Length: 259
Image (cartoon, rainbow, N blue to C red; front, side, top):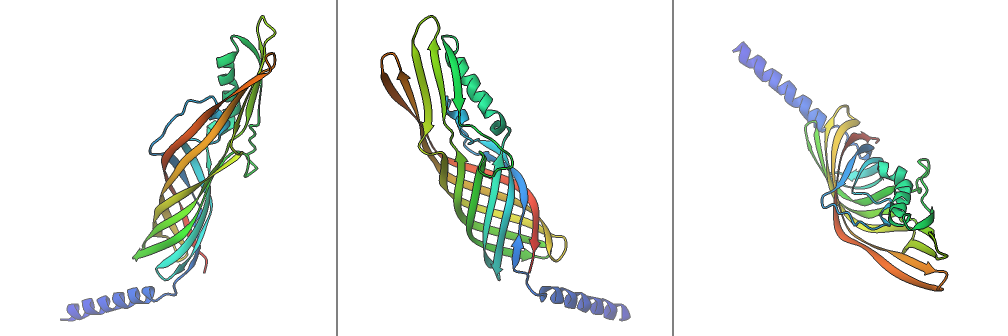
């Protein structure tokens, strides 16, 4: 009988302890830095000579520099901003020069120029950038927290210009080829459904794992203009980049509750 009373007493103490934890003041404001990897679920290589003039890539790492939000009980709102990086960004100027030389240097002397510029310290020097905002919903189960999002946002990347002056070998023929996009920075509307699974470490810090989907219509043009200085003629050609794109980002980080 004493053993039964002891077990009942311990059960009551445990129940009161759990109830007191549930009654703790809800923490509403949070930030959520993280890092991970983004890749396209339907990758495509266009194969145009202008491919290396853009900072768009099918696979890249990312840093979620800022993500913050506010919970109204179970519902809330969140904003996030992340930057995608890839080694191709660093050497795309060299790859563009190699591609132009491969196509023209056997018949012409080439003087190649481009507007490609990359500075890691500048947020506008050629990275892919993504930002989203929208409603969120959370489900708490003990130390576990599940957050589901239905967000909308913008994905941006740079489209630089390029040109080559050609002097034909053995003749006086002079040509200039120029490549330019519709505008230097491309912004695309995105749908960004996502979810986070997190585990409580302390009252205000949780370790989390993120899964993000990005759906957007990739649609832009490059114009190639060939000018013949001897004949005083020019002709243009259009390179059309178009496809419906689905990207997946998978990462990890921490969720810090502030207030």
